[in-house]
Image (cartoon, rainbow, N blue to C red):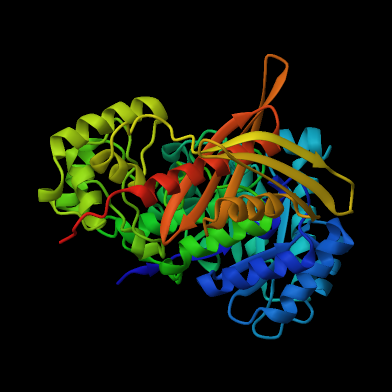
Length: 514
Protein backbone atom coordinates (compact mmCIF):
# COMPACT_ATOMS: atom_id res chain seq x y z
CA UNK A 1 0.00 0.00 0.00
CA UNK A 2 1.30 3.45 -0.95
CA UNK A 3 2.17 5.86 1.85
CA UNK A 4 0.81 9.39 1.62
CA UNK A 5 3.23 12.30 1.36
CA UNK A 6 1.93 15.52 2.94
CA UNK A 7 2.31 18.53 0.64
CA UNK A 8 3.08 21.70 2.59
CA UNK A 9 2.94 24.80 0.39
CA UNK A 10 4.85 27.93 1.39
CA UNK A 11 4.31 29.97 -1.78
CA UNK A 12 2.56 32.67 0.26
CA UNK A 13 5.39 32.91 2.79
CA UNK A 14 8.79 31.76 1.52
CA UNK A 15 7.76 32.14 -2.13
CA UNK A 16 6.61 35.72 -1.65
CA UNK A 17 10.01 36.63 -0.19
CA UNK A 18 11.51 36.34 -3.68
CA UNK A 19 9.12 38.82 -5.27
CA UNK A 20 10.21 42.45 -5.75
CA UNK A 21 7.11 43.60 -3.85
CA UNK A 22 4.72 42.16 -1.25
CA UNK A 23 1.40 40.65 -2.27
CA UNK A 24 -1.71 42.26 -0.81
CA UNK A 25 -4.25 40.22 1.13
CA UNK A 26 -6.63 39.94 -1.85
CA UNK A 27 -3.93 38.41 -4.10
CA UNK A 28 -2.83 36.07 -1.33
CA UNK A 29 -6.39 34.87 -0.87
CA UNK A 30 -6.69 34.16 -4.61
CA UNK A 31 -3.52 32.07 -4.45
CA UNK A 32 -4.71 30.22 -1.33
CA UNK A 33 -7.97 29.30 -3.07
CA UNK A 34 -5.99 27.97 -6.06
CA UNK A 35 -3.80 25.90 -3.73
CA UNK A 36 -6.85 24.48 -1.97
CA UNK A 37 -8.39 23.44 -5.30
CA UNK A 38 -5.08 21.86 -6.28
CA UNK A 39 -5.31 19.64 -3.21
CA UNK A 40 -2.48 21.06 -1.09
CA UNK A 41 -2.63 19.60 2.44
CA UNK A 42 -1.19 22.56 4.34
CA UNK A 43 -1.03 26.21 3.26
CA UNK A 44 1.51 28.37 5.06
CA UNK A 45 -0.44 31.61 4.76
CA UNK A 46 2.22 34.00 5.98
CA UNK A 47 4.33 35.46 8.77
CA UNK A 48 1.79 37.59 10.73
CA UNK A 49 4.30 39.42 12.93
CA UNK A 50 6.12 40.79 9.87
CA UNK A 51 3.50 43.37 8.88
CA UNK A 52 -0.17 44.39 9.40
CA UNK A 53 -0.92 43.39 5.80
CA UNK A 54 0.53 39.91 6.34
CA UNK A 55 -1.56 39.55 9.51
CA UNK A 56 -4.63 40.60 7.51
CA UNK A 57 -3.78 38.05 4.78
CA UNK A 58 -3.50 35.16 7.24
CA UNK A 59 -6.72 36.27 8.92
CA UNK A 60 -8.59 36.47 5.60
CA UNK A 61 -7.31 33.09 4.42
CA UNK A 62 -8.27 31.52 7.77
CA UNK A 63 -11.83 32.77 7.29
CA UNK A 64 -12.06 31.33 3.77
CA UNK A 65 -10.12 28.08 3.43
CA UNK A 66 -12.04 24.94 4.39
CA UNK A 67 -10.25 21.86 3.06
CA UNK A 68 -6.54 22.65 3.38
CA UNK A 69 -5.03 23.20 6.83
CA UNK A 70 -3.96 26.80 7.49
CA UNK A 71 -0.54 27.47 9.00
CA UNK A 72 1.42 30.58 9.91
CA UNK A 73 5.04 31.17 10.83
CA UNK A 74 6.42 32.40 14.15
CA UNK A 75 9.87 32.83 15.62
CA UNK A 76 10.47 31.30 19.05
CA UNK A 77 9.36 34.56 20.61
CA UNK A 78 6.29 35.01 22.82
CA UNK A 79 4.76 37.89 20.82
CA UNK A 80 5.27 36.10 17.49
CA UNK A 81 3.39 33.06 18.76
CA UNK A 82 0.48 35.05 20.19
CA UNK A 83 0.05 37.10 17.01
CA UNK A 84 0.34 34.00 14.83
CA UNK A 85 -2.46 32.30 16.76
CA UNK A 86 -4.58 35.46 16.76
CA UNK A 87 -4.32 35.78 12.98
CA UNK A 88 -5.76 32.27 12.55
CA UNK A 89 -8.51 32.55 15.18
CA UNK A 90 -11.29 32.35 12.56
CA UNK A 91 -10.13 29.00 11.19
CA UNK A 92 -12.84 26.56 12.35
CA UNK A 93 -12.60 23.56 10.08
CA UNK A 94 -9.68 21.84 11.84
CA UNK A 95 -7.00 22.85 14.29
CA UNK A 96 -4.69 25.40 12.68
CA UNK A 97 -0.93 24.93 12.67
CA UNK A 98 1.69 27.18 14.26
CA UNK A 99 5.06 26.83 12.59
CA UNK A 100 7.91 27.70 14.98
CA UNK A 101 11.49 28.16 13.84
CA UNK A 102 14.88 28.96 15.31
CA UNK A 103 18.47 28.73 14.06
CA UNK A 104 20.26 25.62 15.39
CA UNK A 105 23.61 25.64 13.57
CA UNK A 106 26.67 26.99 15.37
CA UNK A 107 26.87 29.69 12.72
CA UNK A 108 23.32 30.93 13.33
CA UNK A 109 23.51 30.60 17.11
CA UNK A 110 26.77 32.54 17.42
CA UNK A 111 26.54 35.18 14.70
CA UNK A 112 22.83 35.68 14.04
CA UNK A 113 21.22 35.02 17.42
CA UNK A 114 24.31 35.79 19.54
CA UNK A 115 23.42 33.10 22.09
CA UNK A 116 24.60 29.62 23.05
CA UNK A 117 22.94 26.25 22.46
CA UNK A 118 21.43 26.10 25.97
CA UNK A 119 19.62 29.38 25.28
CA UNK A 120 18.30 28.05 22.00
CA UNK A 121 17.08 24.84 23.61
CA UNK A 122 15.30 26.76 26.37
CA UNK A 123 13.66 29.17 23.88
CA UNK A 124 12.52 26.23 21.75
CA UNK A 125 10.90 24.32 24.62
CA UNK A 126 9.16 27.41 26.03
CA UNK A 127 7.85 28.33 22.58
CA UNK A 128 6.39 24.87 21.94
CA UNK A 129 4.69 24.94 25.34
CA UNK A 130 3.24 28.39 24.61
CA UNK A 131 2.02 27.39 21.14
CA UNK A 132 0.40 24.33 22.72
CA UNK A 133 -2.06 26.69 24.48
CA UNK A 134 -3.52 27.61 21.09
CA UNK A 135 -3.36 24.39 19.05
CA UNK A 136 -2.33 20.75 19.14
CA UNK A 137 -0.73 21.07 15.69
CA UNK A 138 2.77 22.48 16.18
CA UNK A 139 5.55 22.32 13.62
CA UNK A 140 9.10 23.00 14.77
CA UNK A 141 11.85 23.92 12.31
CA UNK A 142 15.56 23.68 13.06
CA UNK A 143 16.76 26.48 10.80
CA UNK A 144 20.00 25.66 8.96
CA UNK A 145 19.65 22.01 10.01
CA UNK A 146 21.88 20.94 7.12
CA UNK A 147 24.84 22.60 8.87
CA UNK A 148 23.81 21.80 12.46
CA UNK A 149 25.86 19.47 14.67
CA UNK A 150 23.99 16.16 14.54
CA UNK A 151 24.15 15.64 18.33
CA UNK A 152 22.62 19.05 18.98
CA UNK A 153 20.04 18.48 16.23
CA UNK A 154 18.86 15.17 17.69
CA UNK A 155 18.81 16.55 21.23
CA UNK A 156 16.67 19.58 20.40
CA UNK A 157 14.29 17.45 18.30
CA UNK A 158 13.79 14.98 21.16
CA UNK A 159 13.00 17.78 23.61
CA UNK A 160 10.54 19.74 21.44
CA UNK A 161 8.63 16.51 20.66
CA UNK A 162 8.57 15.72 24.39
CA UNK A 163 6.91 19.11 24.97
CA UNK A 164 4.30 18.91 22.22
CA UNK A 165 5.76 19.40 18.73
CA UNK A 166 3.90 17.17 16.25
CA UNK A 167 5.88 17.88 13.08
CA UNK A 168 9.66 18.25 12.93
CA UNK A 169 10.99 20.13 9.92
CA UNK A 170 14.61 19.66 8.83
CA UNK A 171 15.41 22.54 6.46
CA UNK A 172 18.44 22.98 4.27
CA UNK A 173 18.06 26.74 4.60
CA UNK A 174 20.94 27.70 2.31
CA UNK A 175 20.75 24.87 -0.25
CA UNK A 176 24.10 23.49 0.90
CA UNK A 177 23.63 19.74 1.27
CA UNK A 178 23.72 16.98 -1.32
CA UNK A 179 21.10 14.18 -1.54
CA UNK A 180 23.34 11.41 -0.18
CA UNK A 181 24.57 13.70 2.59
CA UNK A 182 21.02 14.70 3.59
CA UNK A 183 19.82 11.09 3.54
CA UNK A 184 22.40 10.35 6.28
CA UNK A 185 20.99 13.20 8.39
CA UNK A 186 17.47 11.73 8.04
CA UNK A 187 18.71 8.24 8.96
CA UNK A 188 20.53 9.50 12.04
CA UNK A 189 17.48 11.43 13.27
CA UNK A 190 15.24 8.38 12.83
CA UNK A 191 17.75 6.10 14.59
CA UNK A 192 18.87 8.40 17.41
CA UNK A 193 15.76 10.36 18.47
CA UNK A 194 13.84 7.94 20.72
CA UNK A 195 10.45 9.65 20.39
CA UNK A 196 10.63 10.49 16.69
CA UNK A 197 7.65 8.18 16.08
CA UNK A 198 5.50 10.73 17.94
CA UNK A 199 5.99 13.31 15.15
CA UNK A 200 5.92 13.60 11.36
CA UNK A 201 9.29 14.29 9.74
CA UNK A 202 9.26 17.15 7.25
CA UNK A 203 11.92 18.59 4.93
CA UNK A 204 12.36 22.03 3.40
CA UNK A 205 15.02 22.79 0.76
CA UNK A 206 16.45 25.75 -1.08
CA UNK A 207 17.86 25.43 -4.55
CA UNK A 208 21.18 27.30 -4.37
CA UNK A 209 23.09 24.34 -5.83
CA UNK A 210 20.16 22.99 -7.85
CA UNK A 211 19.57 20.13 -5.41
CA UNK A 212 16.16 21.03 -3.95
CA UNK A 213 13.99 18.49 -5.80
CA UNK A 214 16.64 15.76 -5.63
CA UNK A 215 17.02 16.29 -1.89
CA UNK A 216 13.25 16.18 -1.41
CA UNK A 217 12.85 12.89 -3.30
CA UNK A 218 15.80 11.32 -1.47
CA UNK A 219 14.34 12.45 1.86
CA UNK A 220 11.01 10.71 1.38
CA UNK A 221 12.84 7.56 0.32
CA UNK A 222 14.65 7.63 3.66
CA UNK A 223 11.66 8.41 5.89
CA UNK A 224 10.43 12.02 5.55
CA UNK A 225 6.66 12.19 5.10
CA UNK A 226 6.08 15.90 4.50
CA UNK A 227 7.58 17.96 1.68
CA UNK A 228 7.66 21.75 1.92
CA UNK A 229 8.00 23.82 -1.22
CA UNK A 230 6.40 26.32 -3.57
CA UNK A 231 4.62 26.37 -6.89
CA UNK A 232 7.21 26.88 -9.65
CA UNK A 233 9.95 26.78 -7.00
CA UNK A 234 9.84 30.51 -6.24
CA UNK A 235 11.52 31.55 -3.02
CA UNK A 236 14.54 33.21 -1.42
CA UNK A 237 17.62 33.51 -3.66
CA UNK A 238 17.51 30.56 -6.09
CA UNK A 239 14.14 29.40 -4.81
CA UNK A 240 12.60 26.48 -2.95
CA UNK A 241 11.70 22.93 -3.84
CA UNK A 242 9.36 23.11 -6.84
CA UNK A 243 6.35 21.13 -5.62
CA UNK A 244 5.17 20.25 -9.12
CA UNK A 245 8.51 18.52 -9.77
CA UNK A 246 8.31 16.37 -6.62
CA UNK A 247 4.62 15.57 -7.17
CA UNK A 248 5.16 14.50 -10.78
CA UNK A 249 8.29 12.54 -9.87
CA UNK A 250 6.18 10.55 -7.40
CA UNK A 251 3.43 10.15 -9.98
CA UNK A 252 5.73 9.21 -12.85
CA UNK A 253 8.23 6.97 -11.03
CA UNK A 254 5.81 4.95 -8.90
CA UNK A 255 7.87 1.91 -9.84
CA UNK A 256 10.50 3.00 -7.30
CA UNK A 257 8.56 5.60 -5.29
CA UNK A 258 5.79 3.77 -3.46
CA UNK A 259 4.03 7.00 -2.44
CA UNK A 260 1.02 9.10 -3.29
CA UNK A 261 -0.21 12.64 -2.69
CA UNK A 262 -3.63 14.29 -2.45
CA UNK A 263 -2.80 16.62 -5.35
CA UNK A 264 -5.10 16.80 -8.37
CA UNK A 265 -2.31 16.73 -10.95
CA UNK A 266 -4.63 17.86 -13.76
CA UNK A 267 -4.72 21.28 -12.10
CA UNK A 268 -0.92 21.71 -11.89
CA UNK A 269 -0.45 23.62 -15.14
CA UNK A 270 -3.41 25.95 -14.65
CA UNK A 271 -2.48 26.63 -11.02
CA UNK A 272 1.14 27.50 -11.78
CA UNK A 273 0.10 29.72 -14.70
CA UNK A 274 -2.45 31.66 -12.63
CA UNK A 275 -0.07 32.08 -9.70
CA UNK A 276 2.66 33.40 -12.01
CA UNK A 277 0.16 35.95 -13.36
CA UNK A 278 -0.94 37.03 -9.86
CA UNK A 279 2.69 37.35 -8.70
CA UNK A 280 3.76 38.98 -11.99
CA UNK A 281 6.72 36.68 -12.57
CA UNK A 282 7.48 34.72 -15.71
CA UNK A 283 8.04 30.98 -15.74
CA UNK A 284 11.29 30.01 -17.44
CA UNK A 285 10.60 28.30 -20.80
CA UNK A 286 12.88 25.42 -19.77
CA UNK A 287 11.24 24.97 -16.35
CA UNK A 288 10.49 21.25 -15.83
CA UNK A 289 6.82 20.22 -15.99
CA UNK A 290 5.30 23.71 -16.47
CA UNK A 291 7.70 25.60 -18.77
CA UNK A 292 6.58 26.46 -22.30
CA UNK A 293 9.30 24.18 -23.72
CA UNK A 294 8.49 21.23 -21.44
CA UNK A 295 6.51 19.45 -24.18
CA UNK A 296 7.86 21.08 -27.34
CA UNK A 297 10.35 19.49 -29.70
CA UNK A 298 12.75 21.02 -32.23
CA UNK A 299 15.05 18.19 -33.29
CA UNK A 300 13.91 16.42 -36.44
CA UNK A 301 14.84 13.06 -34.89
CA UNK A 302 12.75 13.83 -31.81
CA UNK A 303 9.83 15.11 -33.89
CA UNK A 304 9.81 11.95 -35.97
CA UNK A 305 9.94 9.84 -32.80
CA UNK A 306 7.06 11.80 -31.22
CA UNK A 307 4.89 11.33 -34.31
CA UNK A 308 5.43 7.57 -34.12
CA UNK A 309 4.83 7.41 -30.36
CA UNK A 310 4.92 10.37 -27.95
CA UNK A 311 6.44 8.14 -25.26
CA UNK A 312 9.64 8.00 -27.31
CA UNK A 313 10.55 11.47 -26.02
CA UNK A 314 7.94 12.37 -23.39
CA UNK A 315 7.81 10.72 -19.96
CA UNK A 316 4.82 12.85 -18.90
CA UNK A 317 1.84 13.65 -21.09
CA UNK A 318 0.89 17.36 -21.15
CA UNK A 319 -2.77 16.38 -20.71
CA UNK A 320 -1.98 14.74 -17.38
CA UNK A 321 -1.10 18.12 -15.81
CA UNK A 322 -3.90 20.00 -17.57
CA UNK A 323 -1.78 21.44 -20.39
CA UNK A 324 -2.63 21.28 -24.05
CA UNK A 325 -0.65 18.92 -26.23
CA UNK A 326 2.27 20.89 -27.65
CA UNK A 327 3.78 20.07 -30.96
CA UNK A 328 6.94 21.21 -32.66
CA UNK A 329 9.09 24.27 -33.09
CA UNK A 330 9.68 24.48 -36.83
CA UNK A 331 13.34 25.46 -37.17
CA UNK A 332 16.31 24.41 -39.29
CA UNK A 333 16.63 21.40 -36.95
CA UNK A 334 13.20 20.09 -38.00
CA UNK A 335 12.81 17.32 -40.53
CA UNK A 336 10.42 16.30 -43.27
CA UNK A 337 8.23 14.35 -40.83
CA UNK A 338 7.26 17.53 -38.95
CA UNK A 339 6.53 19.45 -42.17
CA UNK A 340 4.38 16.61 -43.47
CA UNK A 341 2.55 16.49 -40.11
CA UNK A 342 1.72 20.23 -40.17
CA UNK A 343 0.60 20.19 -43.81
CA UNK A 344 -1.71 17.26 -43.08
CA UNK A 345 -3.13 19.07 -40.05
CA UNK A 346 -3.91 22.06 -42.27
CA UNK A 347 -5.74 19.76 -44.70
CA UNK A 348 -3.23 19.37 -47.53
CA UNK A 349 -2.75 15.99 -49.14
CA UNK A 350 0.81 15.02 -50.12
CA UNK A 351 -0.39 14.92 -53.73
CA UNK A 352 -0.90 18.70 -53.69
CA UNK A 353 2.73 19.67 -53.02
CA UNK A 354 6.28 18.43 -53.49
CA UNK A 355 7.61 17.54 -50.02
CA UNK A 356 11.27 17.58 -51.05
CA UNK A 357 10.92 20.96 -52.74
CA UNK A 358 8.98 22.31 -49.77
CA UNK A 359 11.70 21.10 -47.41
CA UNK A 360 14.45 22.84 -49.41
CA UNK A 361 12.46 26.09 -49.39
CA UNK A 362 11.79 25.59 -45.70
CA UNK A 363 15.53 25.40 -44.90
CA UNK A 364 16.15 28.59 -46.91
CA UNK A 365 13.49 30.48 -44.99
CA UNK A 366 14.72 29.26 -41.59
CA UNK A 367 18.11 30.78 -42.43
CA UNK A 368 16.34 34.14 -42.87
CA UNK A 369 13.79 34.24 -40.08
CA UNK A 370 14.80 31.44 -37.70
CA UNK A 371 11.44 29.95 -36.79
CA UNK A 372 8.65 28.97 -39.20
CA UNK A 373 4.91 28.93 -38.56
CA UNK A 374 1.96 27.15 -40.20
CA UNK A 375 1.08 30.04 -42.48
CA UNK A 376 4.73 30.16 -43.65
CA UNK A 377 4.50 26.53 -44.76
CA UNK A 378 1.53 27.32 -47.00
CA UNK A 379 3.43 30.20 -48.57
CA UNK A 380 6.45 27.97 -49.09
CA UNK A 381 4.35 25.26 -50.73
CA UNK A 382 2.21 27.38 -53.03
CA UNK A 383 3.79 30.79 -53.77
CA UNK A 384 6.92 32.08 -55.47
CA UNK A 385 9.56 34.34 -53.90
CA UNK A 386 8.55 32.92 -50.54
CA UNK A 387 11.81 33.99 -48.86
CA UNK A 388 11.30 37.69 -49.58
CA UNK A 389 9.56 39.53 -46.79
CA UNK A 390 6.33 41.06 -48.04
CA UNK A 391 6.23 44.84 -47.82
CA UNK A 392 2.69 45.44 -49.03
CA UNK A 393 2.07 47.28 -45.76
CA UNK A 394 4.92 49.62 -44.86
CA UNK A 395 5.27 52.26 -42.15
CA UNK A 396 6.16 55.66 -43.59
CA UNK A 397 5.77 57.89 -40.56
CA UNK A 398 4.54 57.80 -36.97
CA UNK A 399 3.72 60.68 -34.64
CA UNK A 400 2.49 60.38 -31.07
CA UNK A 401 1.52 63.22 -28.77
CA UNK A 402 1.42 61.72 -25.29
CA UNK A 403 -0.01 63.50 -22.27
CA UNK A 404 -0.17 61.81 -18.90
CA UNK A 405 -3.68 60.61 -18.00
CA UNK A 406 -5.14 62.46 -20.97
CA UNK A 407 -6.25 61.17 -24.35
CA UNK A 408 -3.31 60.84 -26.72
CA UNK A 409 -3.04 61.82 -30.38
CA UNK A 410 -1.60 59.18 -32.69
CA UNK A 411 -0.87 59.70 -36.39
CA UNK A 412 0.12 56.74 -38.56
CA UNK A 413 1.22 57.17 -42.18
CA UNK A 414 1.04 53.73 -43.78
CA UNK A 415 1.89 52.81 -47.34
CA UNK A 416 -0.45 50.17 -48.76
CA UNK A 417 0.59 48.57 -52.00
CA UNK A 418 2.34 50.88 -54.49
CA UNK A 419 0.62 54.20 -54.05
CA UNK A 420 -2.04 54.05 -51.39
CA UNK A 421 -1.21 56.02 -48.25
CA UNK A 422 -3.51 56.63 -45.34
CA UNK A 423 -3.26 58.87 -42.32
CA UNK A 424 -5.44 58.29 -39.30
CA UNK A 425 -5.54 60.37 -36.15
CA UNK A 426 -6.93 58.81 -32.99
CA UNK A 427 -7.49 60.01 -29.45
CA UNK A 428 -7.22 57.25 -26.88
CA UNK A 429 -5.64 56.80 -23.46
CA UNK A 430 -4.63 53.21 -24.27
CA UNK A 431 -1.85 53.58 -26.82
CA UNK A 432 -1.37 49.81 -27.32
CA UNK A 433 -4.97 49.11 -28.30
CA UNK A 434 -5.35 52.41 -30.11
CA UNK A 435 -2.47 51.58 -32.46
CA UNK A 436 -3.75 48.05 -32.97
CA UNK A 437 -7.26 49.24 -33.80
CA UNK A 438 -5.93 51.90 -36.17
CA UNK A 439 -3.85 49.40 -38.12
CA UNK A 440 -6.76 46.98 -38.22
CA UNK A 441 -8.99 49.75 -39.59
CA UNK A 442 -6.45 50.88 -42.19
CA UNK A 443 -5.65 47.37 -43.41
CA UNK A 444 -9.26 46.14 -43.22
CA UNK A 445 -7.93 42.91 -41.71
CA UNK A 446 -10.07 41.67 -38.81
CA UNK A 447 -7.42 40.19 -36.56
CA UNK A 448 -7.50 39.84 -32.77
CA UNK A 449 -4.65 40.85 -30.48
CA UNK A 450 -3.96 38.00 -28.05
CA UNK A 451 -0.67 38.91 -26.40
CA UNK A 452 2.57 40.81 -26.70
CA UNK A 453 5.86 40.59 -24.83
CA UNK A 454 8.45 43.33 -24.60
CA UNK A 455 12.11 42.78 -23.70
CA UNK A 456 14.80 45.41 -23.39
CA UNK A 457 18.57 45.39 -22.98
CA UNK A 458 21.42 47.87 -23.14
CA UNK A 459 23.82 47.37 -26.04
CA UNK A 460 26.79 49.72 -26.45
CA UNK A 461 25.10 52.38 -24.31
CA UNK A 462 21.89 52.13 -26.37
CA UNK A 463 18.60 50.65 -25.20
CA UNK A 464 17.36 47.98 -27.59
CA UNK A 465 13.70 46.93 -27.30
CA UNK A 466 12.36 43.68 -28.76
CA UNK A 467 8.61 43.21 -29.09
CA UNK A 468 6.88 39.90 -29.81
CA UNK A 469 3.22 40.15 -30.82
CA UNK A 470 0.73 37.29 -31.08
CA UNK A 471 -2.51 37.79 -33.05
CA UNK A 472 -5.24 35.56 -34.47
CA UNK A 473 -6.86 35.76 -37.89
CA UNK A 474 -9.55 33.21 -38.80
CA UNK A 475 -8.37 30.79 -36.08
CA UNK A 476 -4.78 30.89 -37.38
CA UNK A 477 -2.01 32.15 -35.10
CA UNK A 478 0.28 34.88 -36.43
CA UNK A 479 3.46 36.20 -34.85
CA UNK A 480 5.44 39.40 -35.29
CA UNK A 481 8.88 40.15 -33.88
CA UNK A 482 10.83 43.39 -34.35
CA UNK A 483 13.66 45.25 -32.63
CA UNK A 484 14.12 49.00 -32.30
CA UNK A 485 15.41 51.61 -29.88
CA UNK A 486 11.78 52.70 -29.40
CA UNK A 487 9.08 50.49 -27.88
CA UNK A 488 6.19 51.91 -29.95
CA UNK A 489 8.17 51.55 -33.15
CA UNK A 490 9.02 47.91 -32.35
CA UNK A 491 5.37 47.24 -31.54
CA UNK A 492 4.03 48.83 -34.75
CA UNK A 493 6.63 47.11 -36.94
CA UNK A 494 5.70 43.76 -35.34
CA UNK A 495 2.02 44.38 -36.10
CA UNK A 496 2.83 45.38 -39.70
CA UNK A 497 4.85 42.17 -40.07
CA UNK A 498 1.75 40.26 -38.98
CA UNK A 499 -0.43 42.19 -41.46
CA UNK A 500 1.94 41.28 -44.29
CA UNK A 501 1.93 37.61 -43.22
CA UNK A 502 -1.87 37.58 -43.12
CA UNK A 503 -2.07 39.17 -46.56
CA UNK A 504 0.32 36.56 -47.94
CA UNK A 505 -1.79 33.89 -46.26
CA UNK A 506 -5.00 35.31 -47.80
CA UNK A 507 -3.50 35.43 -51.29
CA UNK A 508 -2.41 31.80 -51.39
CA UNK A 509 -4.21 30.03 -54.21
CA UNK A 510 -7.21 28.04 -53.09
CA UNK A 511 -5.93 24.50 -53.17
CA UNK A 512 -8.34 21.59 -53.28
CA UNK A 513 -8.00 19.85 -49.92
CA UNK A 514 -8.75 16.20 -49.35
